[in-house]
Amino acid sequence: MQQYFSADPACESRPVSYTFEWKDRSFSFKTDSGVFSKGETDFGTELLLNALPPLTGRTLDLGCGFGVIGVCLAAVYPVDMVMCDVNRRAVALAEENARSNGVTAQALESDGLTRVEGQFSQIVTNPPIRAGKQVIYSLFAQAHERLLPGGRLFLVIRRQQGAESAARYLSDLFSRVDTLERKKGFYVFACTKN
Image (cartoon, rainbow, N blue to C red; front, side, top):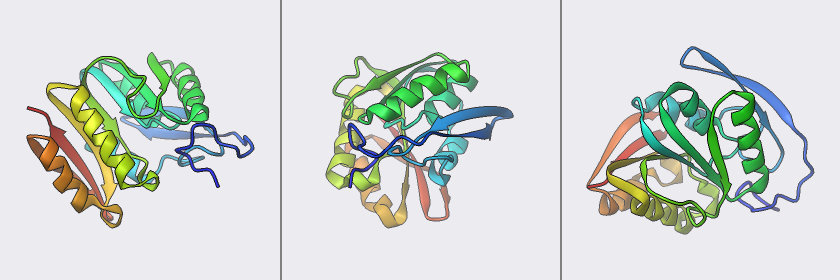
């Protein structure tokens, strides 16, 4: 069975739309089969969004799915938004959702950051945990390489899916790892690069 982190989901397309309220704004998102969290904003993503401080500068939504994080941040903050995902169906949806919500964001099909250029002030991700620890840790390392000095990686991860071991790994990469939020077994980390 193909997962949402497959490049080209084989499952039949069954689009669904829903609305999401954040920061006194209403967003409309189109989702589909073969893309993470079809038909809703998952709890982890919402917790991550609500824990973030105000952002500015070049920002990457890593593993963007259908674009909830990137679209919301681009609508509310003065960021230069780039969204990327390995899943081409997700990237097409992220592009469409940016347009339909009136925000400017670049959407790229990329395995990790392989096709993403340049440096970022911050990278935000709800990582594809089901892809496995090796993939997730590789994404964290790639994010570290692409952050500007003082840049931050923001991520959400569940305790039962390895939050504590991920925090130890992130502490080896980054000069500082702070817990911004903890709720229902989910942790939101802010990892700062020297």
